[in-house]
Length: 367
Image 1 (cartoon, rainbow, N blue to C red):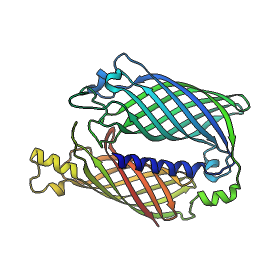
Image 2 (image 1 turned 60 degrees about the vertical axis):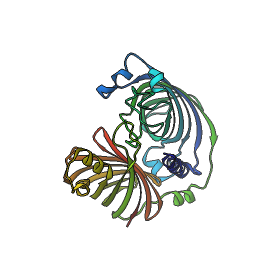
Image 3 (image 1 turned 90 degrees about the vertical axis):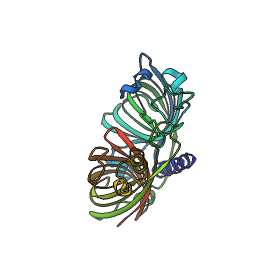
Image 4 (image 1 turned 180 degrees about the vertical axis):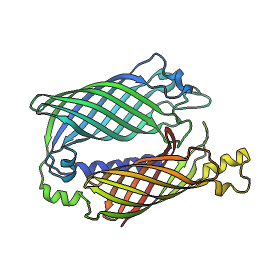
């Protein structure tokens, strides 16, 4: 788990440094308060969500971009920032508290001179003080590890009170889970209403023509190809201390739709050692466990780019699936960082609709 934490921190620093580095922008500080509840998305966790509300306090540092970079203009001068979030959860003796930090992009949808309606999406890391323990905390059927990933989004209205001062309000969704690195992993979904105050505090200045060349890796090639490989860790059942490895090799062809958008598709290979353990335990495919733990899939997907950082979505179909344990359709969500014109790092979560399978960390090359 310590290696996962260090990898998250390293990836987080790369993203934040790349997008915020040296633009002609305005730095802002925001204090945000939330009030809401934990959504009971599974019948086996309703005992954790009954008749209790939650409070969240959030501090943010945002940068209001000026539109001088290509990707900033395409997204109508978005805000980029980092948040630190503290939440008191339901039934504190079971779920405890959550401390999270995540990177986010806030994109305007509608705006006039004084008011902006926007959508925000963020991802990062969280620490939950309580987790499942067979002896000391068996009722925590949602969280199997202290370290978890965080996905956050909101719809927000920001109004200018006077120059440099703003009030905000909207609805937010926050998700904590570890992508089945430790079971159980139902995760927690927090739905809240929120209000905030924001103040401009800093101004950045630079030569943006030079900066754009350094931080933008757009290519004029309309069509391209890529190959990547990733590794994951996965547990099978609650209290399982064995982390099983899983591997993924993927090929893709992509078509560039614009400076910030790519449509892609390809074929990929999966191998999951946790399936071998499950088959051995259930005495399935005796002598053929390795071949039954392999899958071949085809997929289509899309990438949205923010300088060197992309948000990635894939939806695929298993062409080869001997066991048929899960749905034939799978999804992959994640981010990638283009550290070289022909190379990138990525982090992805593989799911079967709402059920997480595992989190992948990998490297790839494009041509």
